Image 1 (cartoon, rainbow, N blue to C red):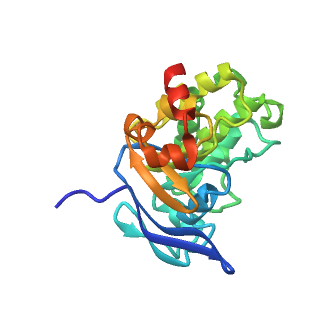
Image 2: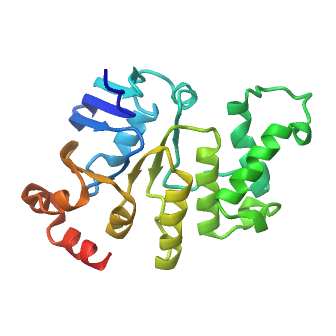
Length: 257
């Protein structure tokens, strides 16, 4: 029997009132694949992420994580099953240090529940894991800096660290390079590659340079439907994709990359 997909969507639909946003979407992402979800504004990309991560409930259809249905579960329940998500807007603890932010991220995965009598400084395993993450995201020199005093790119790197802190096998990144300069974006792509080794990655991204630099496959979402899902070169050459969304943009981005 073949291994289950890391993420599988089956006839997934989501409506808000009479407006249908996700229209019978099917998608199967294999374990370890890096998949970029692209499409025009209003295509339903963020809604799709909200459905997978449990922030929205599906109107119908199924969502499976490593073969187990997760539609209907709460976000924290899905997180504990091995799925982590970052957001378009940076989501960190501004008044905690970089190290403290990372340590908060690892506590639950190491079995530490809510207990006011425990001294965090004595939790050797949590501290060691936070130090490892600090090195992975290359913020060792900012260890004791308050998160609010980091640059924007550093804050995004910290959020990536928090996202993977719990050891999730599936990671969702929502426009991770938005607002970055070209040089920051280039470094950030390499960081994402490094910290997601061995993990399954789904990312929503508008920057075609990022898409080609990061993704093994591209899923094109248009009006709530996946109209193409394949390796970048095949998607770029797909006439339906060109007509519906990309035109010559993909070709230009591929040439530039």
